[in-house]
Amino acid sequence: MMRPLALLLAALLGLQPALADGLTPKAKRELAARNGGVYDDPEYDPATTTRMFRVSPGPSSLPPGQVASRIKDIAQLQSSRDNQLVGYGLVIGLAGSGDSLRNSPFTEQSIRAMLENLGIATEGGSARAKNVAAVIVTANMPPYVQSGARIDIDVSSMGDATSLAGGTLIMTPLKAADGEIYAVGQGAVIVSGFTAQGQAEQLTQGVPTAGRVPNGAIVERSVKAEFDDQAILTLQLRNPDFSTAIRIADAINDYTSQRFGMRVAGERDSRTVQIRRPKNVSAARFYAEIENLVVESDTPARVVIDERTGTIVIGNDVKISRVAISHGTLTVRITEAPRVVQPEPFSKGETAVEPFTAIDASRPDARVAVLDGPDLQTLVSGLNRLGVKPDGIIAILQGIKSAGALQADLVLQ
Image (cartoon, helix red, strand yellow):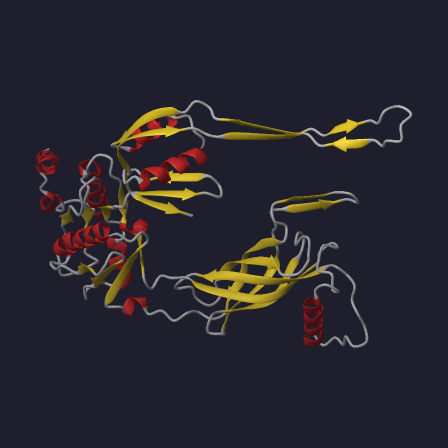
């Protein structure tokens, strides 16, 4: 009876080392998770005793309005990069929607070369069928992938084919930038779009001339990556920021100081954090430990405007100094109403068309609003009070930036 009571008192007092005695490893991990810590498995370092460490503050201790993220969500290993592959191939089995060989001579040349490689003579004949299309095949080869693994491939028509639906990609070698073949693709092409055509009209939805072959390529050659031999691990932030880089380094050092008794991380710039791997743990196991550490990421205040689509994205930290805005839209209407003029009876005149143009310009009553945006909600509410459309909001934000009242970067796309 005294044993559970002692454990309860130890939990209330935060005596994590004492809790490690007398509990199974599973119970220790569950208790560590409830207390916001990480259970130090003896398999990591047989020389150490079983302990529990509190590696980072929980979300409740973060400043209001801030979001905590795992390191794996905001950064990635420099060595964990994809390799792009590309190849040229043929899609066969199209129901009359392939390339016209007259307009796509490279397709006919490819067909002849393929048949000759299969031992079929093609001299003295010409093909007219439209059931073959020349395509470009692309793929991303993930890091650490080994020979025999399968990866997805994308297929895009490069001729005048109208659809790749129902087609099959035949064996296509995929090369990297060094010119070496790393994978071979083949399989049925899946197309999301479609096209329907009649004598007087054609309907197209989606992009029927591009498709995908899931697991369509087999890796024949792996990229050499000696991850476990790396003494220095380099993290690259997805969104470069000095504050975030420093917080990542501090979080890793806080953890490794308790776990290994040493500081191993250091920020190099706004994008890079370098980590020196301890000698008594593998690189994969060590990175698995630190990638789940939680840090508070930071981003600069920014407004992104896409004038082509009218899309406006306003960051949470954007603020506007107190400013008064008047916005009115000038509307110009031009109406063409030509009139037919008939000649007088029994005259030699001819019927004529007399042009008539009516131009009307109007400007609705402009509203005046005072914007003082200490936070995003106040800013959005102030813009909504003006009752303007997205194109008007774009003009307003550009004017506020020109006036020096927008405390954020304005990015135009």
